Image (cartoon, rainbow, N blue to C red; front, side):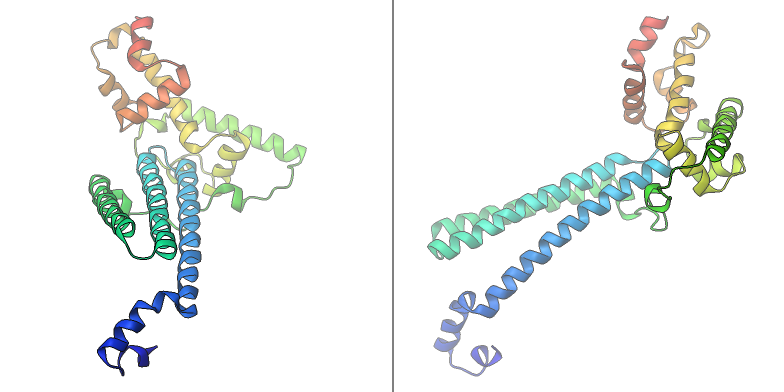
Length: 267
């Protein structure tokens, strides 16, 4: 290949470059690139999915909106990749012409727009670059699938009752930065055991488990006449949320009403 580019005269170089796309070696690289591209996107979707599961199992205020944005960006780039495939197909069928030129232009502007959008979203979500702790794994991947014995079930029930007692009496959920590691220290239990207890035996993500207590607390405050001067924003911060959108979503999921509607009906 180097001989066809360097050690020949100019007309031979032009002829060689124009015929490169028809060479078996180049076609092999095109197919190899496409295969690697598909593997990359599949791996990207799996990593984002795993990160969301790990977030929900270990944190009470995870920024799942950032993960959702990454998921949408990945899908968008995957769709844009098909424009490239169409460009190759048009070139193969019709050669280099006006249609091919229009597709190249569309392709360039589309990738420019998507890249600018990605940078805009990333600048507004700096946690994009922080990632998720790589040592954390989904609890289902680290727990035995064997059915527990009757004795084990009794022990788990006792642990669940103790955990609920701690949640009610000490109210650790009021800490907006609460993680499963923090709660494990308070209940004197290994993190893995606590995660298994909540995610498998209570059958809830840590995110949902803690936020239900926050919602219950918020409901008490919203219907308390003595606290009617507090705004919804003040209440959500007091009960442990740090995002209005996350609070509204969780509250409506749990009660079927928005916080404002709930307060109007309760007072």
